[in-house]
Length: 84
Image 1: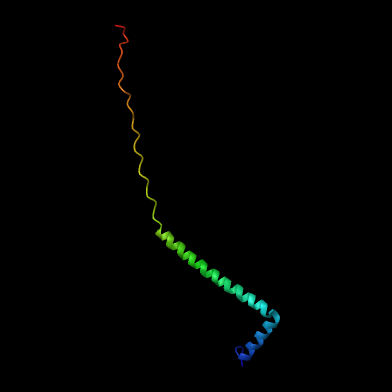
Image 2: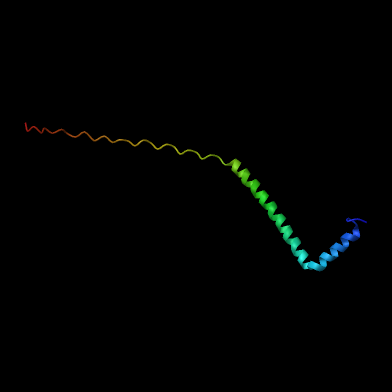
């Protein structure tokens, strides 16, 4: 008959039910379950993010632009400016 006896736990459970009521305990357990679900979802998202980061390929370098063509002026007829 120590701290872990069955009667001890039954009495503790009854006191907790009287103090908090069934509704409050059910609400706390529901919140606890939601917290665990949220934690598991966060772990899965972290794993997916890490997997996606490992799969990301480096960006492909864009092809270098073609050098601009330098247009040479069309040969014009040379006119004699000497007046002769």
